[in-house]
Image 1 (tube, one colour):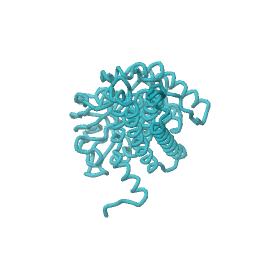
Image 2 (cartoon, one colour; image 1 turned 45 degrees about the horizontal axis):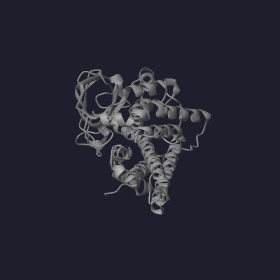
Image 3 (tube, one colour; image 1 turned 135 degrees about the vertical axis):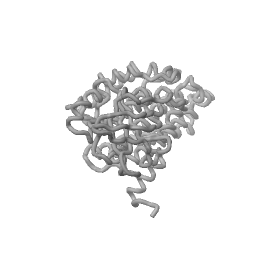
Image 4 (cartoon, helix red, strand yellow; image 1 turned 90 degrees about the vertical axis):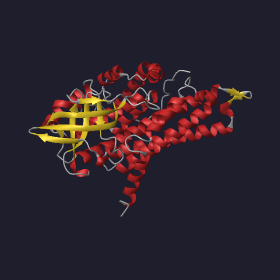
Length: 390
């Protein structure tokens, strides 16, 4: 069975502009994303031309300032766009989220001159970004990164390897965290590195269980030279910038997770009402009806949680704990719901003829990226009771 267009979710949106935006996204999803999703994922093909379309449509800079080509949309709206895109194809929804994450450092910490020079192309000029924090030996322990940037006159020379980089090897720009000083969290600085910089290269993409259409690769910096005008923020401020970006990025992952879960529920509902056993639709059996009810309830709870965190962010209030909660709950929900969807489809759910098995494989990575769910629990506990291990 081919992928189905996402079923419209009854959304509470703050403006008529936001309603028009969601309508545009649904049209793009139905016409441009869903028809090719299964084939392209199976082939491991990244839909770069689709991201060009999204950029032209104003969908790659939604939460940023219109002065620089952004969409002036609150996170409450932006995240619901991500959910719609991820429900159509996670490679697309997550790709938009990662691009926004990569743009965050310059938009939030760059100088006026840097923003005027770079943001219009990043937000609406067809460029695609990548975020470079993790390394082969420092994933959850980001402060232990080893990539170095050494000052050379009015420039910096970056050497090292980043790992698990979404859009690695195809991005037009990389937001890179590199060590410029002492060991530990205070010696890290952020840089904006062009994708065609001499000395920058990428390994072949990782062979992943899911999201095969989204390239994830190691990125190598072999003496990559960038001017000091591409340093973002102050020297030693890089980890603070990176973690601030991740607070917002985790909300993007949460929204994508609910999109995948909603797609899986839609698939399960359609199958359960069409499939007949013992003379009636299997949706008439109480055990299966209770599964569907639990799936729907978990999705609604996740959507409410990420939107509550988004509204805190939009109001300028602290939201880091709520972002961690949303990422934790929504990605765990996606894993449960997609697993249940496979179960409801039975043997068909285990075949590639239906998208349920793809949703299940894709959901797993959402529990890992942008801070594993174990890290989210640590973040939440730290907010509740303070640092541990003393």
